[in-house]
Image (cartoon, rainbow, N blue to C red):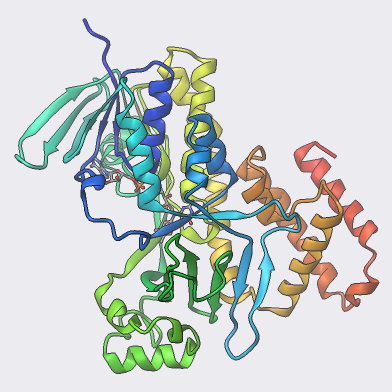
Length: 457
Ligand SMILES: Cc1cc2nc3c(=O)[nH]c(=O)nc-3n(C[C@H](O)[C@H](O)[C@H](O)COP(=O)(O)OP(=O)(O)OC[C@H]3O[C@@H](n4cnc5c(N)ncnc54)[C@H](O)[C@@H]3O)c2cc1C
């Protein structure tokens, strides 16, 4: 009998990267995507939604040999350019090391680049318009509804991997077996949602605001951020409460919307004359955290990426964590060649603590970006972190541990990062002038913490 394929559900960011890596390892892969082929849809050049890609994601892309190609389509962002209301804007660098930055990349561009690689690999068969309805967890048989005909088809695989995002159908099949699997599941929505707007390029295709930064307009209970696109435009995301006087539910009439933007974002709207139209046309997205466990069933089915751990976007790590899943799964496959049962078990055990950690850090960062980036103690702490990173090669702030140290698991980055934060905030609240701080003594305290938690000096 012919070798049964590994069946991956979802040809999004995680599913395509995983398909590629498994195919490179010699597995036959069948990839099913519910949507039509995005390469045949109209993509408004450059105006796509963009994501922050950083070192964890880049490491995984490097392993499949596409990192350099993707980096060519990225825009480096060196820090947060903060625009407080009625005060001067300032840059808060992501790191005190000049080589550390994050990258703005088009979601569609990245997905298309991965799909092109997938399609050219002889070990991968890809099926679009094919929506997973149900998985038989014990026999690895998957029922699909074929989009164009609406007919059902059943595919038998060696194993099934659900990379079908936050609303995962594969995870739903696992939930249906809750008592056999002792399946735990939690879903927590933020009281805030998001809406996308944009800033167009200048007439000559240039950038209207600083290109190499992630812009933030923090306003306490709400904020707008902007990431650059390669065509000179920016994608703006506004994060507002769903309800209340600044909530999306209230901001519906032209006059309420205009009044809100004129009061809180007067300089920003100079750059986006179409904001009212975009506000009314674009939908409100919801934001939430999904945690579940186990991620595997009977050694036959696994969930990965957002299907296993959807997080809020405030650390810019959802895709990076999903790509990191692929890198770690790849390593575990090497250690247990051919034994999917062991692979799935080890993978879920290795990952869950870390994805829970980044989920919690992402929630912390929501509050930090929204109402602390322009707080005096916070700004002083960031300056101190920059100085320490600049002078001491072994020191990494919490943000840097998460973003620029992919070899440090998220759970360790959280433990050490939070301890460092407490310590440095105490220093900053001590009323001692910045120039009078005993920097070598502070560094010694931090080095001791790193030694205790990471076991390295
Ligand atoms: C507003 C916002 C901003 C973000 N910003 C960042 C950022 O800056 N940096 C970052 O790292 N992350 C960011 N993220 C998170 C990131 O988008 C996700 O973590 C990432 O897309 C997860 O990849 P995935 O492949 O697991 O899921 P998805 O990208 O959701 O892909 C799932 C795929 O499965 C398909 N599918 C779904 N159901 C089925 C089915 N039943 N059958 C077949 N196919 C199916 C879908 O069509 C899709 O193609 C952001 C998220 C949001 C909402």
